[in-house]
Each structure stands twice: as structure tokens, then as C-alpha cells.
Amino acid sequence: MNNKYISINFNISPIYPGTEILIAEMSQLKFEMFEENDLGLIAYIKLEDFKIKLLDEISLLKSTEFKISYSINLIEDKNWNKEWENNFDPVEINDECVIRAPFHKAFHKKYEVVIMPQMSFGTGHHETTQLIIEYILESNLKKLTVSDIGCGTAILSILCEKKGALKVDAIDIDKRCYDNSIENLKRNKCEKVFVQNSSSECLTNNKYDLILCNINLNHLVDNFKNFTTISKSNTVLIISGFYKEDLDFVNIKLKNLNFYFKDFKEKNNWVSARYTYRKIID
View 1 (cartoon, one colour):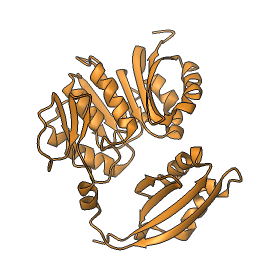
View 2 (view 1 turned 90 degrees about the horizontal axis):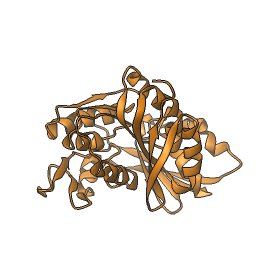
View 3 (view 1 turned 180 degrees about the horizontal axis):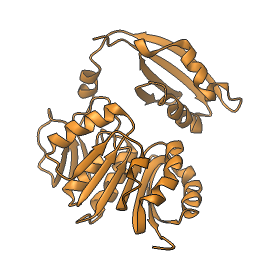
View 4 (view 1 turned 120 degrees about the vertical axis):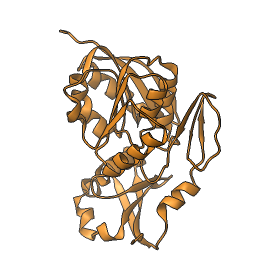
């Protein structure tokens, strides 16, 4: 198996929202991992998938509103999943929940989610994931139906089942996330989570009590109208994946679709916000 990767180091000014836009664009072009830093980000792609003309498809690099420089480097063979595992520490949230891998000792918390991280988004380390987990821990999910849009490793879905959800529909457009989610559901003996390798359009025949969505802002906004089709009166929407300075913009967009702002949580300028849907005609 060829484990050679290309890394592209981007220096971006202004770094916000340049980094977020760049990740959104490159995630559609076979780039597998992104590492944000103080100067911008590092993007990783398999050597076999990389062509220099691929960069021509990134519109941000042509923008006059941002100053962007980059360098391209070849990374020699590595067992990337092993590297990922070696740098994956357990995550404890609010003294009652832990996210850990199978190779970690059991913590005997009230809620223990066991995942094999691999390279899917959703190890529990990112602020956005932790903020939504805090909301889930505060919520009574008994007999509620849940959709988890952009499920990553299915951490949120697994926790929802452990909290008593009646059914959880989890989706992700990334096949690697889908495969990883299936493994993690088995690992946690889940029976009420159903995962699909698809976009939110596949859910339109359903109505949910709770909608979770943790994806970047551009893709989040693209899904707003789909949220209305899977909502009923008093559906709760919890979203994350954006910064505090974007909250007013998000609130206005969602209010126009009858999602009314309730509250938000913040960590290191990342935000998770909660809304209630008020359907005009039921």
C-alpha cells in the first residue's frame, strides 16, 4: 500500500475567514486532512491523487481579497492511522462523558463512547464537537428521533443512543466517515443508529425532534433549507462549525426559515448554537 502523501503549507492573510473557505474548497478535491496553525493551515493529500493543476480549481487562490502563499512537500511513507492513534488522547467532558479509543483503559464514566479514530473528523478533540456534546448531555433525549448531519465518526449519534434516543439517522457524504461510523456503531453495540453515505436530501421523508449538524459554515448554510423539510413544530436544531463573529449572520439566515435562536455556547471563539423551529402550518 502506498502511504506517501503531499503536504501543502498555506500562509493566509487574513487568516479568518480564509482558512475556513480554503478547507471548504479543498475538502471537495480529495484532500484528506487539514491542520490549522497560526499562519494558516497544512493540507494533506495522497501522492497518487495530487496533480499541480488541482490547485487551479481552488477559487480562493485567485482572490484579490486574500494574500496566500504556499509550499508543496513530499512526505515519505507513514502508517497514518498509527500516527493518528499515537496522538489520540481520551477526551473527558463535564465529568460524565469520555471519548476514548479501544486501546485506552475504561474510565467507567456514565457515558463512554469508544471510537477508533483513524482519519475521520470527529475524535472529540475539536471545540465544535465538545460544545455539541455538552448540549446533548444537558438534554433529555428519551424517545426522541434525531438526525446527525455530517456525522464524522458518529460520536454524537452514539452518545444520543446512550442518552435514550428512540432512533438516530446519521449521514455523511464522505465514504471514509461512513465506513468508520459503521465500525464505531458496532464497537458501541448501537442498535438505534442508522448511518448512510449521503447528503441531507436523503432525510426529507422524515421529521425529527432533534437535528444535529457540525460542519463548516459554507456547507452549513447550504443545508439550512433542508433542515426545514425534516423539522416539525418545536424541533430543536443544534449546529456548530463557525466562529462567534458569524453568529448574527447565522441567526438571521435561520430566522428567515422560522428557526428561532435560543442560546449558544462558546469555546476558543468556536460556537455551537441552539434553535427551535416554529412551523406556521402543521
